[in-house]
Image (tube, rainbow over all chains, first blue to last red; front, top):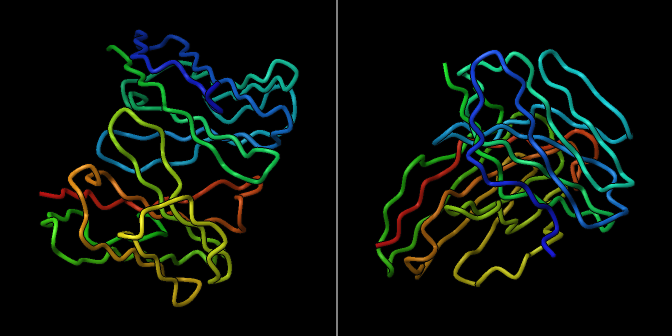
Length: 110
Length: 115
């Protein structure tokens, strides 16, 4: 079982819709969870971090964490073409390693 | 403009060449990292430095040699690379090793092509 899994996509949503990105992880003791956005040809940029069960909102972004289900998600409301990028999920495991998922490619269609 | 600067942005080198990648962070962070990003694969951690001490070498071949002369600078020395080493090499820094709840700041990366 891979340590951090994401659907590779591409995920296509129309402009203005909600984009939902999902991530599962295998280490039940993981404590910190991150979402990075990576535009084509650019480096990853941290957009959200979450470490408690529940929702965390920042502008149009909402991160959701469910440790019992080992599941973390990122919702993007009112999606814009500028949100088109690859979204990387990263998990800090119980053995103090940060593991990245393979990323989900998001395309927002005008 | 990122607080982590990498040079060069692009590098083409032959299999017998020796080259170095440079990373500088202006954030006052205590930990620095080298990551490799290949097409269709997750980010792969290569090396971790905390307060200038190497704390992790993630089974990286010896043809990659890191150097951290101080907490602001990190180098990756390359020699006798293979074509499969062609990738985007990313430097990152964090407040502390393991990134805690603060995550990483990445540099813009060096796109390496081995011919």
